[in-house]
Image (cartoon, rainbow, N blue to C red; front, side, top):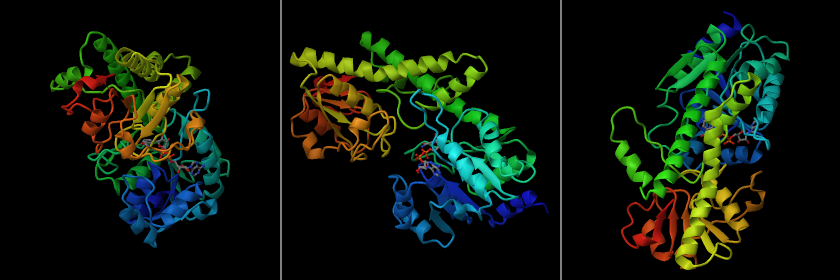
Length: 444
Ligand SMILES: NC(=O)c1ccc[n+]([C@@H]2O[C@H](COP(=O)([O-])OP(=O)(O)OC[C@H]3O[C@@H](n4cnc5c(N)ncnc54)[C@H](O)[C@@H]3O)[C@@H](O)[C@H]2O)c1
């Protein structure tokens, strides 16, 4: 049996050694799942703090159980490392590194390129390499393959190359890695078959195999663009209906009772997270190469990025109307700094943008978030790094002029919040069940 044909048999026998590169929100659950089903797993990350934390058996992602991490750390079939040469024995190498935008809002492929060079340095015949990072259609074949082949091996002949996007919804308690079918694309039959066999060994929902890597890359972008455009639509409708004194939340709840032809999306203070605010621009960038416009993507981006400005002007006019004062000097509490409910991730969070906008208007801004104790360093909001969440007792001590609900975490006592702050601007309808002081609440 040739080395590359042998990989499928080794997957079936759980005899393959898997390396996961990038142990973040995508890579860590993947490493856990591959290990659980019997593979030997090497987890690689350039961040040594992650490797040390894993070795101590501790989870650094709030919804990943520490018990599962301690079991992984104690297993003789798992090793965490920051040393590239430790990947040399891996049969299957899965790349889950970040794909952000640069400061010109264009794809920043640094992590994918660096990782591809690392993989090329240890690549041997018979290996399967899978890219999972979200990216523009063509990346696996046009960017990753030439770097891997620079070591003299040929894709499809000496090693196999596939693309399989992660379709995770962080914090979703119903859908997770095992329940969502995995999209798999490869440019040769054997690459598609080996990658599908690998994922089917630990994903009960199975795989959806598409003809090539660029189709698989396009599937992922299509899913996220669909979300971005629909969120922009309801954000626009929110502003329109608000002017007519109609609650967008009542409208969407009622519209959602239609059993066909409608799917609810909810408005908010702006997009956040690693995916929806970023991924559409990967396609917009690539489309420019073909001279094709991406008007929906640009328009959705424009509407969604205008939302924090809309919220600040809404808050300012309520403060003005109710208290006869401006935002300058007002004590404003932001509730929720994570980009979505019940997660400890503040990447691209609208809370950061809102904090910066309010401070630029002279407001004294503090925040409360049970999941984000300290604001991490970010390129866009470097000045906010290190700011700490208030304790709950400081939320309810009556010193704030207004609270702005940015993230609707469960477990926050919204009754107590509304009782202790004279104005609550709620961008998520988190106060829907609050019965007292309703006059203090403004949905925005
Ligand atoms: N988080 C999500 O919900 C989600 C969902 C679907 C797809 N994705 C995509 O998956 C990819 C990874 O996202 P994530 O959320 O897991 O990111 P993350 O930042 O949580 O994790 C990435 C990890 O890669 C490490 N890393 C960076 N450069 C590296 C390198 N050169 N070599 C090895 N490790 C390196 C970082 O230290 C980090 O631990 C991105 O392309 C993202 O768009 C993310």
